[in-house]
Length: 261
Image (cartoon, rainbow, N blue to C red):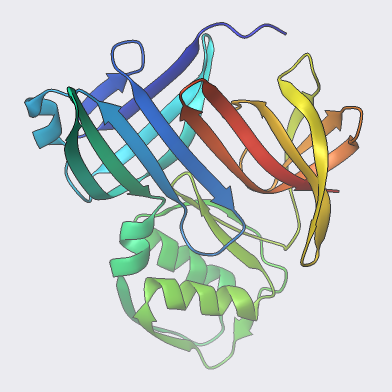
């Protein structure tokens, strides 16, 4: 498999910024923490018009990949923007939260009627605040015989009901995923030295996890809970991603992940 031409496109402030036309760097993390991921984005030597167009709370998309194979690696809202000079270079730095604006600022006050189910409440909560629902698959879809009163932040309301159903919650690429713990999302991707694997996976062990740290050429398909097959000198088999990061910095155009069987 050959990789032709690194590509990156940032959509922000009603404008499209392309790596073919200016320098762009990013660091996009993803993990199984309930809190939204925060991406760092750096754009070099923007015009004043472009800088003025980029504001907090605007939707932002980062697309990346290679010629003929580009996809979204992050979608969220701008939480911070700073422009500074370093010598002759004008540097604009952004922080972008994955669904963090709705997550942190929204409040819900709702009384649900008798025999409402947890799934029905979660569908209403996610739809009410404009967060796209990527998956809703509960381990235990509780029925509340006397109804349910919700009066709290969106964050607390969703987290509480998800815990009651023995299910996990994650925002990824601007979408909510509510699904059974430790259940992966198949990608159909075989990773080896011919498809982007760099070096040999290294063993890691921390807390309850034991697996491998893996480095590959940037792959927009890989995110939290992605399931892939690895062929290497050290790791062979089917693995699930529990943590990772997409990076474009200097000569690095990489996806690094931690995987477990």
